[in-house]
Amino acid sequence: MTHKSIPYGRQTITDADLEAVVSVLKSDFLTQGPSIAQFEEKFAEYVGSKYAIALSNGTAALHLCAMALNVNEKSRVITTPITFAASANCVRYCDGEVYFADIDPATFLLDIHKVRALLEKHPKGYFQGIIPVDFAGNTVDLEAFRKLADEFGCWIIEDACHAPGGYFIDSKNKKQNCGNGNFADLAIFSFHPVKHIATGEGGMITTNSKTLYEKLLLLRTHGITKDASKYQNTPNEVAQGGWYYEMQELGYNYRLTDFQAALGISQLTRADENLERRRAIARKYDEAFKNSKVIRPISFEGNAYHLYVIQIENRLGLYDHLRANNIFPQVHYVPVHLMPYYKQFGNKKGDHPFAEGYYDKCLSIPMYHSLTDEDQNFVITTILNFIK
Image 1 (tube, one colour):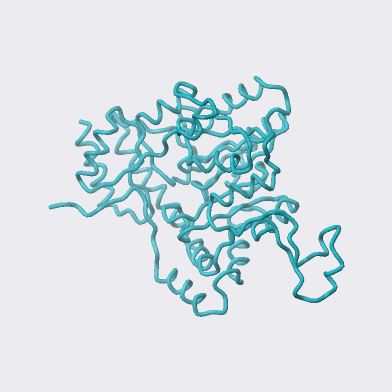
Image 2 (cartoon, one colour; image 1 turned 180 degrees about the vertical axis):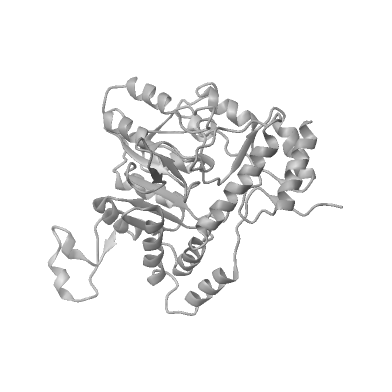
């Protein structure tokens, strides 16, 4: 008997989610309505930041962060090669130059020592920013990165797409939520269906900077504002009537819809419960694989487990074996520096050996909060039967 299909990740939509969306669909607002502000307020409260800006997707969030931080053709920014391409692409959207630093092979996270070595190789001021990624939900020590960034005059964008609800423990033994703005200038999240909170597409930027927050609001909607009183050199036409608006900057239409925000609000009410389920699934995998040939990364206490990534010598063999048994794993990620687009800038195989070695063996196996015990047992048994 063929087992039912088990993907590496999937969304969960409840009756409460459906009711929330239908309620908005029946209201007066489909695009920028009251649910947007409510979602932003609740998400900022959830992560502990002062401000949150809802956007059309995580890539849009990254792009606007780069714009708000004035990335341009003279900017040089460091990030990890083991991430989705958008973490680097946001710099290129603004004509900046992307540099990669290798990962820590024990955690799969951007190695702060490699970043320091890269910074020290160049004069101060050569680099403008760092984009660490909370990869797979395993959290970066942003306190350490903040100290490094301050030493070299860099800003930080935390790519927390994999880690809503995640946290790290700071030097004072205090929990620091991903995206709380205490160490990063800006943080971004994604609400793609395989993420913890799903809105179809969708993203969020969090920050504690009022200046950056106001700039992001402007950039999100074409650079247009109706509140001309905030800006200098406003033309006299403002006195003509309530219809007046003006374009201050070249912005984009990166708005989230109101019904997506309603779905996000509903999903957010179950975020902690779903996160605990993911951590329980991870513990079960850990126990099952602890005496096997399966290699797992060092995982920190605040891991949000967007993915459960393993390494195995015969990755292709296991990949095919799982698919033959209706289990559909994925690979996260092909190293960004080896993408044809980034090779044109001089990046090449051998530049980041730990990232490349990780890629040769990595596989993301099913991890989502609705994964049943029965399905997880089947995944575990299928993997162990292959490697024994």
